[in-house]
Image (cartoon, rainbow, N blue to C red; front, top):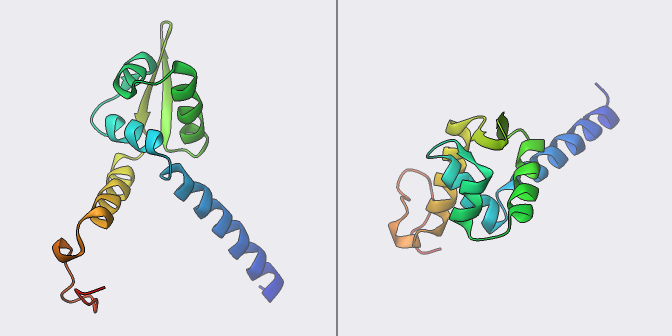
Length: 117
C-alpha cells in the first residue's frame, strides 16, 4: 500500500471515528443511550423520560440508528429501540462517567499518570 492509500484509509477511519464520537457528544443522545442501556423502549417512553418533543427524540434516534448504535423494531404502531451493542455503549458511558469524576478519585497508579494534573 502506498502512502496516498494509507493517508486516504486513515482519513476515512478518522472521519468514521469522529462521527461515532459525535454520537456521544449531545446531552439528549447520552440521556437516550443511558435509558436504552437499561431496557428496550418505545419512542413515546423515551419522549416522556426526556421531557422533550417527539420529533426531537426521533431525530436523535435516527442519528444513532444511522451509526449502527441503536436498532428499531416496529411493534404495531410503535417504534421501539434497543442498543445494537450494549457492551460497547456501556463502556463508552462508563468512560465518560470516569472522565467526569474528580481527578483525585480517578485511578492513576500503574498508568504513568500524575494525580495532580
